[in-house]
Amino acid sequence: MSKIIIYDTTLRDGSQTEGVSYTVSDKVKITQKLDELGIHYIEGGWPGSNPKDKEFFEVMKSKQLKHAKLAAFGSTRRANIKPEDDANLNELIASATPTVTIFGKSWDLHVTDVIKTTLEENLKMIQESVAFLKKAKREVFYDAEHFFDGFKKNPRYAIKTIQAAQAGGADCIILCDTNGGTLPEEITKIVKEVKRKIRKPLGIHTHNDQDLAVANSLAAINVGAVQVQGTFNGLGERCGNADLCTIMAILHTKMKKKSIDEKSIKQLMDSAYYIAEISNYNLQNNHAFIGHSAFAHKGGVHIDAMLKNPLAYEHINPELVGNHRRLLTSELAGKMPIVLKAQKMNIELDKNSPEAKAIMQELQEKEYQGYQFEGADASFELFMKRRLKLYQPFFHLDGFKVYTERKIDSTVAAGATVRLKVNGNDEMATCEGHGPVEVLDRALRTALGRFYPTLKDMHLSDYKVRVLDTKAGTGAKVRVLIESQDQHDSWTTVGVHENVIEASWEALVDSIEYKLLKEKK
Ligand SMILES: [Zn+2]
Image (cartoon, rainbow, N blue to C red):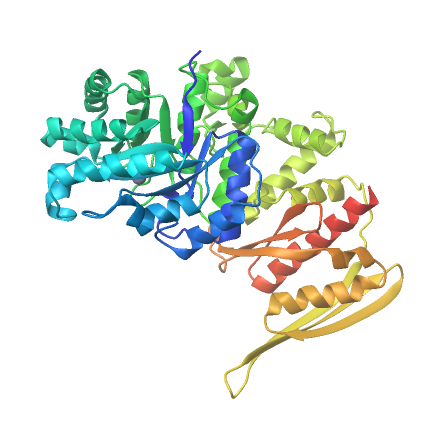
């Protein structure tokens, strides 16, 4: 079974998605998730184009990846200078990644009209830049930008550009459908022709402007491309990039080609939602393979047929990609995933028990209200344990009050008072500071500090708010996600309410209860 190399560019092409903006710590988290999954290459960014990407590579120097190789992205040298004098190429070397990917021009029109140099100089720029990076002992991938459009207009020149990359020593040459306008049959024909002229391994990088990015990637793989570039959930500017989740799922379930391990394919759904949450991006329910509705059956006839034989209305077993069957109007609606998650937390739960049924119903109700637990495992665990009465709450809230004040000198201050009962004692704490959530968090911890001294070892590491659709026609709700960490671990909790402070409070309380419960174990 041949293996297809997966090259993820969520952190570079994906970060160009309208509305998506990653902090350095978001990028580190996504990198770690992709690495856990066994993705072969992770493109971290373009260090020559912005300080954030440069900082990311700085941070990554002290982090070990278990499976993936990190790649820095950049362009060929500028016209008429030496590679060693090119700031961009030097930034790539300074990033200290094992792999470097550079792009260059394949389309003659781009050479003469966009970068305004001669066709001959462009070939030198490609060959010399690749050779310079090879001399610095990097694995070098060459992205042939606009390759398919260039090939259609001037095939001889397009081929010359990738021959220049080959002569420079590129380890893999990636053909890019940068404008996303090529059709699968054109991809097949052109990749076949390129294969006759290029000895180096080929890769494919497609954009989704015609909803064909996945089809185009698979067309190239079918005729011999061994590397596929894309993003998680198809993030990317305009209509996005090729969706790696879908590609890996199809490679595994339909084409019998290996990419990442079977075990990791089963993590695809969870990982896709995790990355979507960090990206503050709403994954569509009808997303192929990994969407919530991808295996949700509603029609009465379908459900009846499904119960007799799932093959009747499903193209694969949903569990292969970590998804699950949902029968929306049935008593049996998706209890299995709950039972499986319970098992992961060492909770015994019989799928036929009344508890499982009640939990399922409550969970559906919560999801309807706007909760999403994929990105908030700690809240999910607490939800299950509360429901099954597996622990006693560590404190009870009597009440809290939060204010925000804008003063005459335009400074803004906030304060919070929290009143609690802990082991029968009344506790109260007041804190002042800058932001309402920050002071609420501090007041809560101050009130609890005397009883639970280990709380000082944890802190909030991330806070995200998302405004939810108002399906029920009530006021807009918000979902707050809070990430907390201590020396060992990080965990995420969720709260939903019309009031952002109440939603934050809910996530804060879960965060603290989770820490205390973890310590008790
Ligand atoms: Zn791209």
